[in-house]
Image 1 (cartoon, one colour):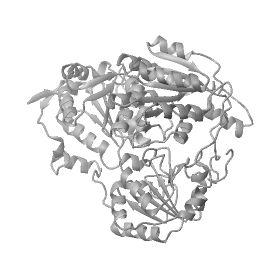
Image 2 (cartoon, rainbow, N blue to C red):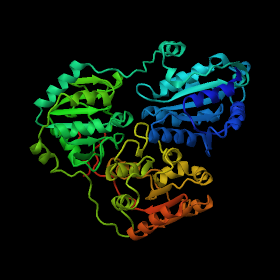
Image 3 (tube, rainbow, N blue to C red):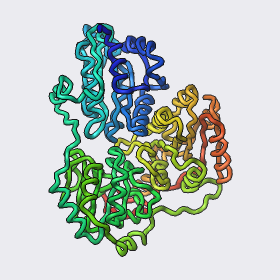
Image 4 (spheres, one colour):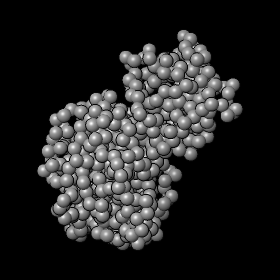
Amino acid sequence: MQMTGAKILMECLLEQGVDTVFGYPGGTILNVYDELYNYGGKIRHILTAHEQGASHAADGYARSTGKVGVCFATSGPGCTNLTTGIATAYMDSSPVVFVTCNVSENLIGKDSFQEVDITGITMPITKCNYMVRDVNKLADIVREAFAIARGGRPGPVLIDIVKNVTAETAEFTPLPREEHASEGRLGALIKRASHDLKLPEPDMGDVEKLAAMIRESKKPLLICGGGVVRGRAHEEFLKLAEKIDSPVAITVMGAGGFRGRNPLTTGMIGMHGSQASNMAVDACDLLIAVGCRFSDRVALDPKTFAAQAKIVQIDIDRAEINKNVQTDHHIIGDAKRVLELLDGMLTQQDHSEWKKYVFSFKTETEYDEGGSTLTPKQISDVIARICPQDTIVATDVGQHQMWVAQHFHYDYPGQLLTSGGFGTMGFGLGAAIGAKVGNPEKTVIHVTGDGSFRMNCNELATEQYYNLPIITFIYNNQTLGMVRQWQTLIYNGHYSQTTLDRGPDFVKLAEAYGLGGKRVCTVPELEDAVREALASGRGYVIDCAIEMDEMVRPMVPGGGRITQFLVD
């Protein structure tokens, strides 16, 4: 049947199982929003306060549900406001389809009002992007975009549609999603786009070689990376760890891929990794990294990283192999499938002596009791004790992010939502909104710093309007804490432009948005505030006072040997 481009887009979204879209309207996308009006009972739209908030919400929705997130924006500044969110999703392999609309075809290339080359801008930070100028191609492009976003190593895709295409008509034939990756026209399109959406089957010889290396090892160490979380390979990873009796170090993005309470867990690894994790990397004879790309926050000095070990990397993306650290062996494949095959080749092992050595070091930093303020550990302990164990945690970026990674214990993939690769201040509240929309039955909290919160606090309006009972915890030290920490340790105490001795009053800000709020300085005050927030059934901001010079410990300087602790 004949349909407008806007209606074709809606029907394609329904084909993909989309029931929620995050976005912000504008002139060039008005035809789409006009059609969306007719789909109100089928597709829910969440109007955020800013396009960047919409991009992070779609990302948080995707990470927490395992579905593809969807985000709408208009042309010009509307779509450029998405770029930080697109880059955030790209760096952390989060599947989001961004739909923007550009000026009409006859205005392209004329510096028209709110015209911008968004496909050119986002080319380096998307898996694939499109500019749709022919309404007859729209349906297949939308289908292809979703297949690419979720296929292989997930990631963001952008579709930019010129305005006249949303009003023009074309014949639309429904195509069930299960037929989208067939050898038909869509399959041909995907091949022409040079995207292999099939998960690469691991080479059996490579898997057998790794099994032999494991049998020979006396001091194995596993690294649980973000690929375990993205691939939902947590059960298979657990089986491997327990079968080979190996300690497990966890990256920030790997949180939830291996339970933080498991006795094999050594804690976080890297620049702010635990003593146990970093010392184990330095002393192991076999290092197996699953879904870990060895970023500069993990392998700070690639030349000395795991210098005594044979290094094995398991990753779905061939481009990540030997990019940062030279491996002795690698396997290309989906983490879940590789670990399934490996399990059948191994028998139960015992590395008691090796574990005794590793766990002689601390797995978590110990803090003194707070005086007139709280310590990071006290805040984490209260939250963990009072909030449900399956609470979803969304963070911004900075000291609070590291404290949450170090001291919370995550049980399942998608429980921690954080910007690990791009380090986006302002990610947390939008991500929390997306997570709560996608997981209405779960408690969702937003952990932030006073610096990060200023960047996204406008989304409290979204939280209030949609009655999303998200609890925001602000680790308030009146400074850009992580930058100040570097200034203290490396820049001779030159505190240039990091002191935040200014407003707003965060409790009054929350009240201005119609939410609850409380400032706390002691553990009893915090406990009361958390219980009140949980019982209130509405959004709530808890402003937690901590010392300005509180540091994330341990810390290894950038480029240093992983055991070269600047502070411990």
